[in-house]
Image (cartoon, rainbow, N blue to C red; front, side):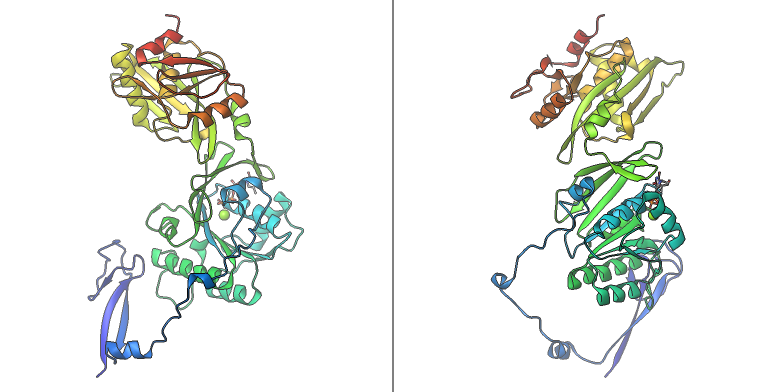
Length: 449
Ligand code: TYD
Ligand code: MG
């Protein structure tokens, strides 16, 4: 006998229930439960009998001959994606609106189209707008082909017929799928689109790049939900007021994560900055309140300037304004200095930032933070061409950091001559002068008071 079952599925978050409701209890969206009728006139045994069984094969019969990677010859891009794009992979490029995703991808597509077939689907901007950008980037004169269709099924069927090497869909959030119950822009829709593109890339060996904004809902409706479905996720980051843009590999099945690439947003698009440290060091000022640190970003040591400004406060609750670093980390170091060095930072306003719009995490910057604060407090600059490498414990002890060899080697290359480190820090080989500190109290020896 035929049985009919009814369930209701949320088109936003895929929550399923047997009863219709006006508001989804999971994602709190209104009017998004869609009826789903499942009719079954067969018992489970019958299903097994009619399904074609999959084929099993041994691993030795699989050809592992690697296909060459697709290179754009934009060094920073090729390096961050793991040495060029892997044929048949699906990756997401994401970032805030206006950060430069379309600009970067147009440049990458233009370069790749010199050797490969590339289709660019612009679902957000008209072809006229796209041409305007291409003229600015001087990327008009080659075989790169464009379309402004946003319907995913037709994009996929075109790709199946034409078999290009690479397709770019800018952006996935603006794509819609005909004949689907999911709402455009919803999580369910995004997942379905990604699933269909994953099949396209794997079954037809076509590389697919999609872009996605970090929406206000961020984690729920944004590209975050796609992370586990795709081969790679790359964030383009930076601050509007700074020109520097960083491309960071957050997930990469074919390369290292946390790999970083640097670009400058200029009049004619994103220009790669292969030597970021030379660029950063040239902007560092030797002045009170400034301390240089070096930290690992992916496989690269980066030299950064920390800047502090401390002023006797007129407020009962002195201000702490921090950017580029965890606010609590700076407050903590100030509290440690207050306690063990007996300076009155608790009665000072503190303004603190990492130069160049960089954001750093972790405690490798502790010693640099302490030096920047002390240097501003005493209005005395640190020794010229020095870097601070160390963590600070709650008891005021200076602790060594790992992998210092790499950091020191890179720092030497850029003219650093003094290392400010923990007492028991091991350093293998260096031509720099080493100043060692056991605890925060000893940091005062650098200031002539
Ligand atoms: P865009 O690539 O459209 O950002 P997204 O796709 O991430 O939303 O970049 C837009 C910004 O980049 C815009 O503010 C203008 C700036 N820009 C330049 O400074 N130089 C250029 O050559 C181009 C094309 C854009
Ligand atoms: Mg865009």
